[in-house]
Length: 340
Image (tube, rainbow, N blue to C red; front, side, top):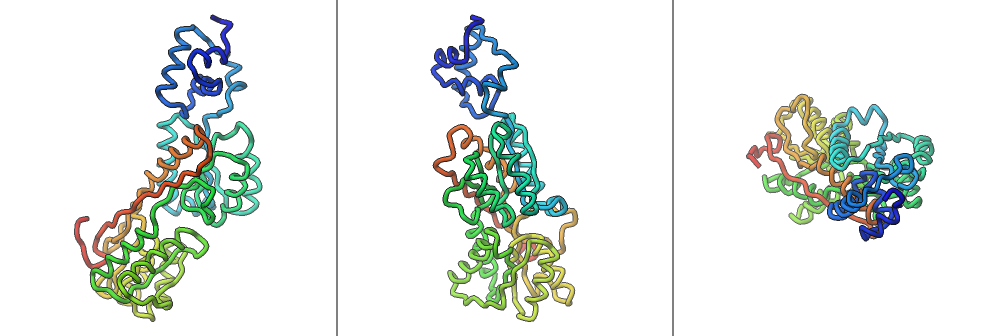
């Protein structure tokens, strides 16, 4: 049986030659029943693949890439990205995949990284965190027909696979909760206007106001940048409009807003109620504790890997679009501290 080839094993197992190669190389993108059948044929025939030939016959590296459009500093200071990466790394471990990590903060970074991540045989697929910096790279990778999943809805999602939270519905739930507490003059600190997260969470804010017949006032809408510093500056701009409540599109901005409110002698929530978005663990919890929309960030990363494995195994078309839900967590900052 020593003269058997991969083609022989594939014929006996009733699968393709590439499937046999993936089984031999312990690649995750093979169904359990198929893997078992191929391994049984290998055991029964005594087939021993030439170890040096494995890399030559296999088109899979067992490695995927994660591209994050952030600088090193902002990656490690924004708790969202470490939690997302933790979920992706957890899923890679479960599926015996190696994870390559790339930070992109400029157009020059994109130009340097693209030849590396698109090189044939280097990566089996790529996850890209959505963001204005990464849009050009996303388009180039998609045109190169590399298995590709976007973490977060991209600006042009039609032909791309992505995993996202239902940001519109989640923001509407947060604002509707404030309305249910009797607030009418509700401000919002949005994310960047060229970012789909910022766009969608503002749309949810507007949707909730419309559903409850509350007119939208432009003076109650200020753009932020998802940082605590940005939230503080935005809230300072909102204070002259005398809002009774504020929905911030991230917890960082919500904490900055609370600091700005308290800096002028006002109280949260007695004078201005505050709701955020994310529910990330904080080294020093704010006072009062923050009401927020909890999104499953680690689960988000796990799901992105699962979708990417599906693309690697079954092809890029049709695009997969996975939408996850967020949960309202009610604490002290909105004035309705109930267990939820």
